[in-house]
Amino acid sequence: MFRRLLTAVGLSSPDTTATTAVAPEHSASAIVAETVSGSHVLTIHGYSQTKELIRNGQCVRSGAFTVAGHRCVIDYYPNGESPTTSDWVSIYLKLERRSTDVKARVKLGLLDKDGEPVPAYWYPKNPDQVCSYTVDGEGWDTHRFIERKALEASDYLVKEDDYFRVRFDVVVFKEIRTEKRDAETLPAGPAPLSHCRRTWVGISAASSQDGRGLMLLESVQHLGVDQAGPSIYLGITMVSRALLVHRSRSGRRI
Image (tube, rainbow, N blue to C red; front, side, top):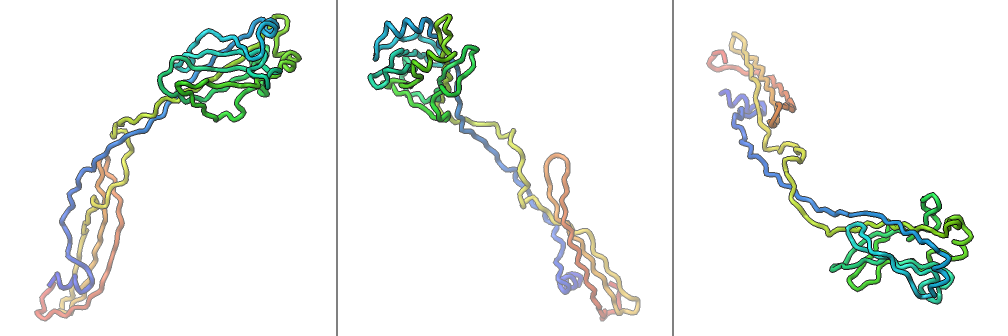
């Protein structure tokens, strides 16, 4: 009879079955792109003499140096690299002893007498440009680094000592790799719905002594979430009340 009363007011029997939660599996991985950076300053001592002794199309090569993990050399053309640049200073940066293609971001520019960059003479103008140095490639160059007359009229050429300086900033892109990560360091996500349980708090009933029963059914239902660690109880309480007038045929109290 008790079940019929519950059904009459749209309530179901208490569900005391708890869902057993299965611990979720977690994994992690990463795609890693790294760079190696460095800089090099080249000083041209005796600029006037290099201009007189080295013809157009000829260069002086610097000693080898290592920057960003790669061996490099610089070719300096005081009278330009080609006939079309004969009024300019040309500069090349080359990578030596490479067995694979190298991708790098190269910036080079003129320094003033205090060693500070001169923005008008920094290349490339697009700072995000990436160069590809192939096995047989020539490297990176500025055919028109600075006009000789502009250099000679400026303070960037330290005239009493007859020198000027050029700085190279190099960022080399390493091969992209993948790696595994420790899943324990990942933040915990929200608990799945399978962790929810249903709890019936109480049902109360009463009737009048003359058998004309006035029954008050009150149910309180909580939806809870079990989580590991400190107990976090998230509840949604639904209270349904039904007033049922019942005439007991047997006259017994329910």
